[in-house]
Amino acid sequence: MTPERFSFNQATAKYWPLPDVIAGCAAAGVRSVGLWREPVAEYGLARSAALVRDAGLTVSTLCRGGFFGADDWLEDNRRAIDEAAELGAPVVVLVCGGLFGRSLADARARVADGLAALAPYAMDAGVRLAIEPMHPMFCADRSVVASLAGALALAAPFPRAAVGIALDTYHVWWDERVFELIAAAGDQGRIACFQLADWCVPLPADVLVGRGLPGTGHVDFAPLLKAVADAGYPGPIEVEVFNAELWARPGEEVLRETIAAYRSVAG
Image (cartoon, rainbow, N blue to C red; front, side):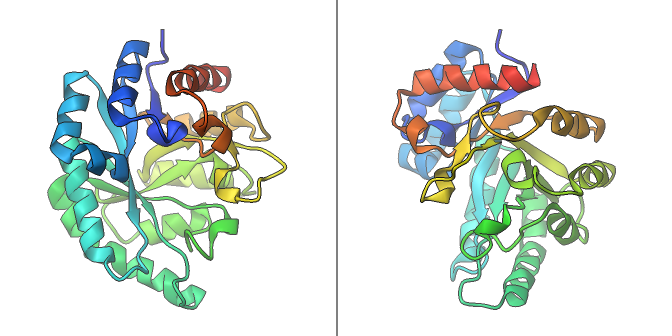
């Protein structure tokens, strides 16, 4: 039997067509999927929502919003919220964006301003924004939110129903304060999403695709899983792995290995 809380993030099998992802997950007994906006748009938003619904699945997250330094950030993020509401996804994951030619302080201030503009819109739509702190190596180009402490500070001014954090083991496992900060996130009700991926070395030339399936690298998952459970997070646990070797393989095979990897660390 597939673990009840397991959610398959479709980025783990990037080139598997959306209808096949949904059919494969349903056949494997997977109850929840994490979706990405581009394949949803390609298949059609209404068709995607019907596909998920008819298969008896739920959408754990929609990725991604954010990139607050882009010229069209406001319109794009409002679209992401609307898309999540249509899909029944309770969470939009925010990859907050890099410097975009600004100083680090100015880029981070822009993220804070963006959250202030979007939080009421998200509340009205019944969708939660999840700030994803990313490993510092992505600070210049992908996210100036480079620590769990920074993500929690950005979320603090907003209602917890509007803004939380996306906790990804790949990005936070190294932090000396990680357990203290996970506990704080739980106390504040800020954990909106929990994702698993492993840290493998050596990193490839393109560090974006350097993640591994849980249990294949250096992350110690047991204490992280316990910390998140102790923090009171009750939701789905996604496996989201960017890995070029996985992407080159058949989606059904990737799904089987992902479920096995999840079991190996989460039981």
